[in-house]
Amino acid sequence: MELQNSQKIVDEWIKAHGVRYFNELTNMAQLTEEVGEVARIIARRYGEQSEKESDKNKDLGEELADVVFVVLCLANQTGIDLQAAFDKKMDLKTNRDHDRHHNNEKLK
Image 1: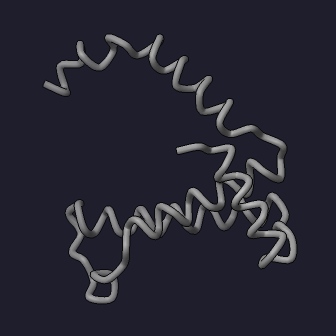
Image 2: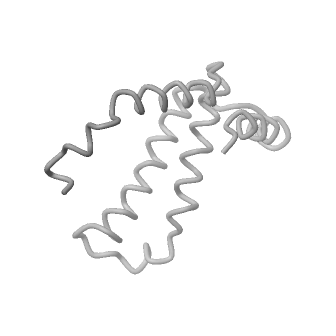
């Protein structure tokens, strides 16, 4: 995924349809709400809780996309180049964790 392009698409959408960005605190609250919706689906669909009838039609992909949308909003409004940050994080994780998980007895 090209995160820079995704950030641009979200910015253009906000300008065309959203009037303006919600402030950072509101977007953080929205992000928390969206992550909660993802958690609810996963806990009930893949965890030990039974899934309510009203949750059976919820689309996990759509909820994950909501999370990504709000993250892109937060990156835009705080001046973060998410692609650069992601690439840096992947380099760090690659170097730090190259053998870490292969040697984890819990994963065997």
